[in-house]
Image (tube, rainbow, N blue to C red; front, top):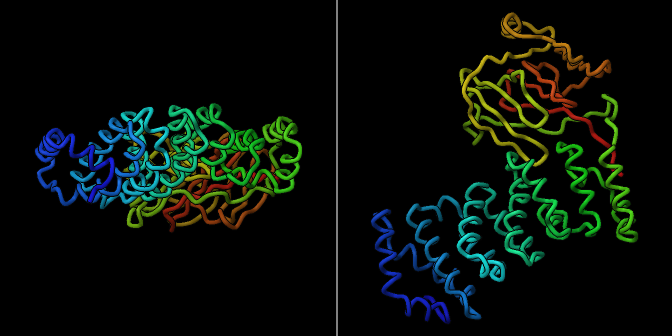
Length: 373
């Protein structure tokens, strides 16, 4: 049962709100009051207290009708977390831009899928560090990227520049870092998005920075100019993709295609082609039209690999070679890695290497591992 100022708002607008409910039911015939009222009873009261929330309550009411009509509360539990936990904590910002923020945050929760509840709770923490509602959506892009929406990497890095230090660190789950370390987090991610900031900056460096914040620009410059370590110090940094039966995109083990980039892999699975945006935070695979890009296979191999090798390239003029025993050559350096032995295809990724295997739906990415400051 709705109480307090929210109850008075509902009573004052009863006729209009009932008409909006009927219009929503025309669009969603299965919509019932029993689905809507319990959500309103928990979502509206904390937003209404204190007055002046009419436009915000309007926006939330419409959002509840939409999600109840589409049965999204059952399939996306993060939406209730957003309404019941995050919105009350974000009330100050929502009151200023309810018609834009309410649907935008709801869309973000839906887009991150299984991590929607995590997004909702985290955006409330981020919002506590902000006074400008426009910055909340910028911070939301950084947060969505950190939760696995790799397609946002470049735009999120741009949005991050405008955020206050504490909000940026909260979006990156680095709340324990001193505010002066925010530029280091950005410098680390720009330098190499396959290695997360907490692996690039040591606890000792953070403690020193807390004592001497003025050292931040110098440390950030060291991160930006960090040299590529020897090939022998490269590590397996990610396993990208999965079997469609486990929620992934691949029906069969994938093969890497030429034209792959450091954070954008191109693969084919049988006759289906994908572009995959990927980094240390996650990966997103999207189908793309088939083309004429070739598969590049390791040297050696028998059976199906020998057959595939007849129609694929084993090497190009980029100095990158891979053997079946996991021996990798990059720019005249050679080292052997058990994790990429027995590969079925590989791609040079501008300072990293991706490898597929005939018995796996996951792509393994090998990249430089830089020691922390």
